[in-house]
Amino acid sequence: MKTAAQLLVRCLENEGVEYIFGIPGEENLHIIDALIDSPIRFVTVRHEQGAAFMADVYGRLTGRPGVCLATLGPGATNLITGFADANMDHAPIVALAGQGATTRMHKESHQILDLVNLFEPISKYSVAILEKDIIPEVVRKAFKVARAEKPGGSFICLPENIAAMEVGDDIRPLKVQGPTAPHAPQVKVEQAAKVISEARFPIVLAGNGVVRSRSGEALLRFVEKLNIPVATTFMAKGVVPFSHPLCLGAIGLQSTDYVACGFDRADVVICVGFDMVEYHPYLWHPKGEKKIIHIDQIYAEVDSKYILEAGVIGDIAVSLDRIAELARSEGNVSTDTLKNYILSEQECFADNCGYPLKPQRILCDTRKVMDDDDILISDVGAHKMWVARLYSCEKPNTCLISNGFAAMGIAVPGAIAAKLVHPRRRVLALTGDAGFMMNSQEIETALRLQLSLVIMIWNDQGYGLIKWHQERRFGRSGFVDFTNPDFVRYAESFGAKGYRVESAESLLPVLEQAFADNTVVVVDVPVDYSENMKLTEKLGSLVCPL
Image 1 (tube, rainbow, N blue to C red):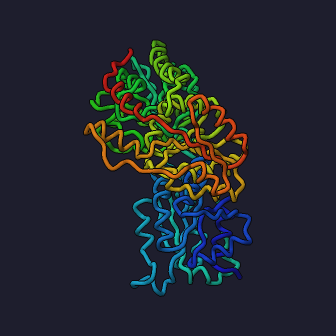
Image 2 (cartoon, rainbow, N blue to C red; image 1 turned 45 degrees about the vertical axis):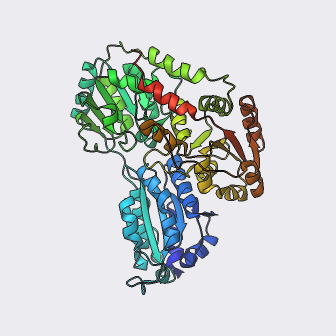
Image 3 (cartoon, rainbow, N blue to C red; image 1 turned 135 degrees about the horizontal axis):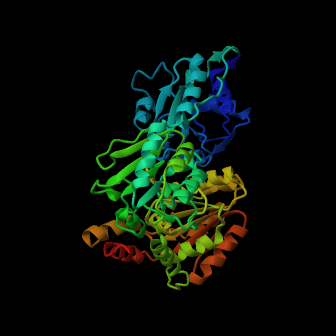
């Protein structure tokens, strides 16, 4: 005989779970006790939001559901932001929570909330286990649903009295299995090939679905054969190497940009693995006059600016190869002009000695330190926009940006998960001072796990992105300024190391030293965000160089 909690843990082991990120609580004690004897590694965190963000990034990097655990009530509600981020960013995640006994769930009772209905709007599957014998079915479904395209969140709560019940040895975990992506109908492949063959200026918009389906090599074959330029969403950076002559970089700013110029000219937009939540079609297709081809594993979202000329639903890599076999290209597409403008913007600040540092200079030096396989986790804020525009990637999942839910506070816990998944790679959490303070307590978690990672803080003592929007819309700002602790001493109080960059020239050697220190290191970088409004003015007056 075993307890229901022990059966739950065996089902998690059966799913291949490596880590569970969470906090012990009274109502999940039976699960915690069962984990003591499990090969699953429980990572005790300092806040449940950090646990959910770690599971979020683990799911995004591995393609397997990350798992987080909380107790009932406030423990469960603290999971919501990170869980919702994973669900909207289409990272597979499974959240577990304890719950009060079923004997008090029907009435007003201490810390009792209807957790199933609370999580239902932000998940693909939300359920309470009210019968001990159904645990294998619930766990198998939760993982299957979380991983299926488009991936997202499954939530399970286990009442404490159910967790303590004994379960017969005949109740076992279920076989892990999942469907293989089907192949698209030939008529749809031919339809897409015909539209592409007739196009004068086609362009590819690659989304995170290409990363999730591991279809980057097929996409590269496709664009090379047909000589079609490709832009990526923020979350698909690196799916085609930025150094490739057909790669225009990332698109996603809600304003004209050099990359957007390619869409202004295009008559056919080939959307591959495109998640609309990242970059709404009305921003790149305002007039609705272009022909759109949708290549994905699931059907397109209904939208007035996303009316399809052809929809090819099936295995993305197979679809791309089949379309490329049938389509032809006139070979008259040139990306040289746009590419040169993008490269020149990156390079012109390489030697800028201004202090506080220009965003462009910070990212130029950061890129010099990071190898192509290394991982940058960007938090959300003004710095995110600069990272998305200027940090070049050669491989997918080397620059992680939350861009569906876009939740602040992801960088530090996300970096912990990234280092657990890829211990031999350099991992950099790039964050603003506001986002850093939201989950900076997880520095202790990283040190306890004996991880080495660098946290770079862009310090402007304010909510820089909101100030940028205020100045752009109203010509003034308010209520966005705050003060910060001494970040070097703050890092040292945890037992980490800290450096403050005192000049533009010192950034590169400080970053190299930070990684060489082989521990958790905080690097405080004063940033000059006057560049934000300069960028707004520049893009507002941009005439496409075509």
